[in-house]
View (cartoon, rainbow, N blue to C red):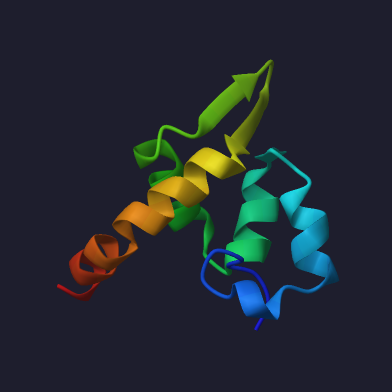
Length: 82
């Protein structure tokens, strides 16, 4: 399994290292890396306060997004299962 560096730090591969070098990522990059669909990425990134608009481009601040995921992933999972 790739991605989710904060969950699987012992399984870091070249893709993870390359991804960690980007402070800002697109929705598409986030969808591919976190293996989530568009709507969950948009919802979670907005909840995290990690969305930045630069002109017409919308980016996610990766460090803010991952901090939110670390702090809220259990609560979010419980809400999804309801």
